[in-house]
Image (cartoon, rainbow, N blue to C red; front, side, top):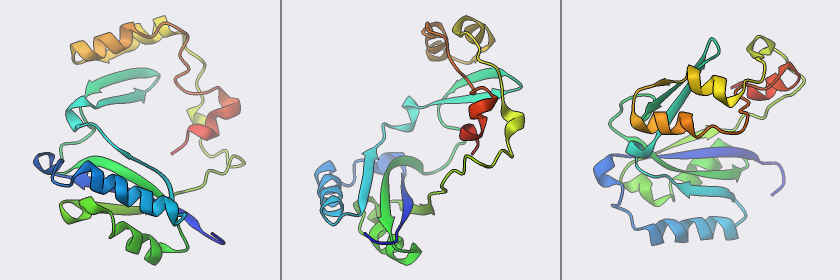
Length: 168
């Protein structure tokens, strides 16, 4: 595709409008984008009430049901596309069927630069799953189930050698 950038098209819908656009129309849109060589990946998401939010603060894992914030619209899916510039990405996003019923946020993908070590302060040691399970703050039975299912060792944040890969 020549010189192009990746853009993430985040599809937002009000919960009661999630099925306003038929899945077949979204699938056809994705197939058309794929045949034009602009689609890298696309997925629809389950409703927000199936979400689990994980936070790590001061080495403590916190698991809560639901999304990070309450909003009128919820993240319903995404399309990862390639476009030569923002204008072309916006034109592509305008063809995404749920744009008629909700909104599509277009955001450039930031390439990670592993040579930048500005977040080396995030490095943590590998923690075993049993220690993690004891440190999880649960707010629901689902969170307890998640905590109890951590059988193999879990690497919450990579060792300092790979910590830059975990920076947002």
